[in-house]
Each structure stands twice: as structure tokens, then as C-alpha cells.
Amino acid sequence: MKIAVFPGSFDPITIGHVDIVKRALPLFDKIVVAIGVNSQKKYLFPLQQRLDWLETVFADEDRVEVAHFEGLTAHYCGRIGARYLLRGLRNASDFDYEKTISQLNQIVGGGIETIFLISQPAYSHISSTIVREIIKGGGDASPFLPEGLSL
Ligand code: ADP
Image (spheres, rainbow, N blue to C red):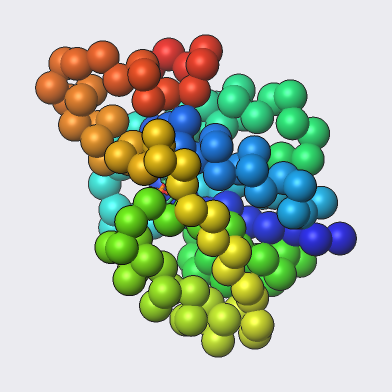
């Protein structure tokens, strides 16, 4: 079974993330959207809230699972039998960052392959960071959020 892990903070999930998962579904049997928990990192939204949003957004996709993990992403993949990582690329700085992580994961994860999907032009400016800034500034972030997701 071809299982891919789509790891991230999803703080919060955006329509850019959803697009990557939907476009990757034909490539895999199952996609595990997994929140990596890093105790050093400060998040705007609590883990449970972020998990609930993922559950809501992917409720109708029976081949998408929602999970969270601590420690290295590559080790998590090993534990659940996933041989692929899924990541989205928006621009050259995503590429530079992702290239190193992907090479590292291939070594640490014993051959885990990262599959990259280039974001749609309409979504390439969307990031969780931007959404958090809008929220903190009291603006309306709903154009960037999946339908039915209210903050
Ligand atoms: P991280 O905390 O690891 O950066 P994110 O939750 O910000 O995780 O993002 C998870 C993945 O989704 C990353 O591969 C990121 O590049 C991708 N991604 C985020 N926003 C978009 C977007 N608008 N279009 C395509 N991919 C995206």
C-alpha cells in the first residue's frame, strides 16, 4: 500500500494545503495529514484545535487520515509504514529549504522519497504565516481558509 505523510504545523490549515492533498490523492492509496509537534515551537492555535480542523476538512475523504506525532518525521513514517512524504512548493525559498530536508529524510528515513507538488498560481501567495498575521491584526482570513472552517 502506498502511504504518504503530509507533515506540517497546519497553524491553521489553508486552502493551499487542501489543494496539495486533493491533487496528491490519485498518486497514493492513503495520505496521512500529520501535525508534527515540536515542544520548542510556539503555535497560535492549540494542537487539538488544529487536529479538529483537519478532521472537519477531510471528513469526506476516506483515504485521508489525520494524525500527530513527536520526534523526527522520518521516524514517524517508519512507524506507520509510509515510504513517501508529500510537500508543497510555492517558490524558490520553499525549494531551497525543502531540498535539504528531503535529502536528510532520505538518509534518516532509509530511502523515504519526498514527492513535491508545485502550488497552483492562485494559491502560491497563501501561507499559514500570512493567515496568522491577518488574524492577529483583526482582519478577515476566510478567503484563505477551507470552506466551513471558522476560527
Ligand atoms: P511547516 O510548519 O512544516 O512549514 P506548514 O503547515 O506551513 O508546515 O506547511 C505544510 C506543507 O504545505 C509544506 O510543504 C508547505 O510548503 C505546503 N504549503 C503550505 N502552503 C501552501 C500553498 N499555499 N500551496 C502549496 N503548498 C503549500
